[in-house]
Image (cartoon, rainbow, N blue to C red; front, side, top):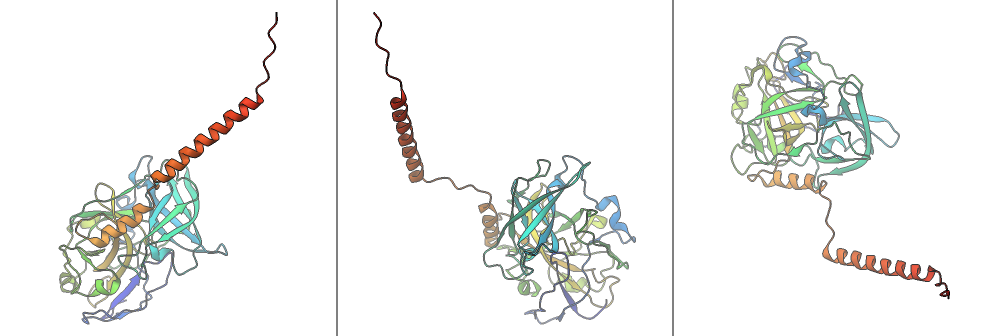
Length: 370
């Protein structure tokens, strides 16, 4: 679909709810809802290239990809209301996006782990925690899910990143819809099936913005330098993004130089993590918006994506606040000294009572025999 406008697309769980159109403060482009389904695009423009091994994640035993989770959500009537991607951050916790768990009466979920040679291992859960203050996609779009039982031992446990330089390479992986760059518009989405495939690739976060989506659309609110905003922004250059160059350059985006390794995110990749090259989690996939100006071979050329930052970056208070929210679910509070003292006193009293009962039960000594 080619129009002289910008189509606003969100990465909602499984299917098609779109955000209400928002007027950008810069007033330099229009927004409209678009029925166009966002697809997971890979850098290779060859039809069907998304099925090349280049973009399929390694699922062998011991692979670092084995902690990436395909999440199915259910409502209180046990209806499947969509899917997202998540990352295992402890034996009992999965990191994903807040918009995945809001808006469709999601009350429980199934986290699906894939084990080579065995297939899917499903772990149910109902513990859903959403970042305080979350209202829309953007920097607060973070949620932590609690599993009912321990995740399988083969699944990788990831940690949050503690440093990142804007412009550095990041690794993406998700179970969302797929497609290819260039002229091919066909896509396939098999997330809600046993055939779901984990795909991966690289990109770079080239700038940041504050808080919600509206500021991220405003050319005056994006920035590369400190203090960094809480939303990490990148774009998909693709091989045919001709008319978007000026549009993107004004927002600090340049060619990533990643060639066919470059990918972007699509529907169902919401909640997926962007990793640094040491497998530390930088952010959680939150939204995309797509430039559909006339002249590009594909409306996904020049797609911009936003991830809610969860890394402990000294140059961003918003990133640090999200980091603290996630970490708070992983720390078992230590008992206070008063509780310890009370516990010790209780133990002493119980031990004394046991000794008293034992002494009452001891048989009387037999009289000495002469």
